[in-house]
Length: 348
Image 1: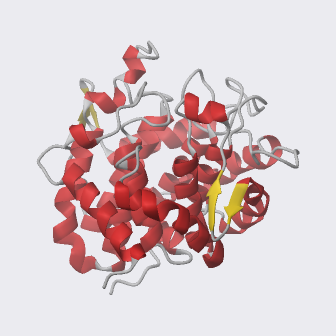
Image 2: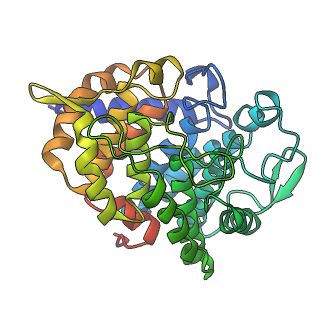
């Protein structure tokens, strides 16, 4: 008889396949965010479940042909206006959606494309046609790197010329990916943004969030009101692929926001994070589950999984996003996400 864990994982995987199995995404099964510029936005329901699929391929290349159609559907979804039109409609920006800033979308599209090239030896489409313009993975990656190295914050900005911790974690990842795939040296600039994080974005408080997640416009200095427990675990998992030793240190502090109840544990976020669709207990706990699996904190990972399991069986409100993270967490072994980005998983 399948265990509770196996049933929960199977249920999450089935929901994801129902979202991505057609020619186009089954949008009726997706959470409808209040605004696409916020953190429950559609792009996150695509890129992060894709991580679970890319990891599955890296661990077992024999799954490529079964998984590739799902990733193709995800890619088509990422190119739909619902994922990027907020740049014009909600933010009133007039520049092309991939021309400048907008790292929240551009960085995730680049990461997806790099992982797709790694898995299949070619991009999902060539060129990338979007918002009346065309580009390709090389041009997009170079543009992001160029913005990073010329920015006063030493990172790429999103909205209002502010650089965000979570989005620039994708910048770090994509620099490494592009270097590995095409022999560039973009990753040498990663130390610049990490210096901004170390020197300006770490909070000195002994409670609450570990980081300020956003800088002032065109500056490395933090906006001190911009701190979030949900952002901490999100950014820590992404950064674990690049600076795992530092993430281990930061995670020791972040654990203060994990609440233990009997044998289960969850991350407790602030009320404003839920109200403003910035994060939720379920979302932050899913990121923490992935992080603890990546770091090899298995006892804590098991406690977080116990909190998530009944929700995974029934379906999360924020689906397919959290189901994707749950599946990713179940597939992770210590160091596996770092190995996915650095190509150190043996093809079995």
